Length: 74
Image (cartoon, rainbow, N blue to C red):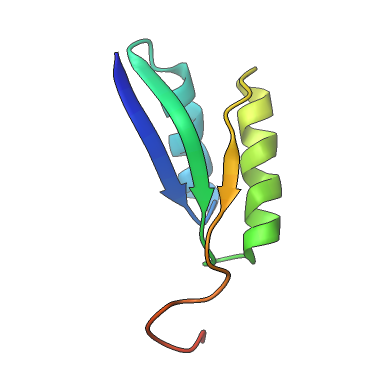
């Protein structure tokens, strides 16, 4: 069993990755961490939660920093 922590901004491609990882037979997703990107971290957490729920899983979701560490958001 391969264990993963997925770090994402939950854009559409990331939602597909979350789905695939949860459905892959020899993968265990231990957590999903959310960073700011295409949407604010709060919305990203909701998106991740919905995606995980679609998989029938209860993987924990953790919010990361709401802003980039090294530059101002564009």
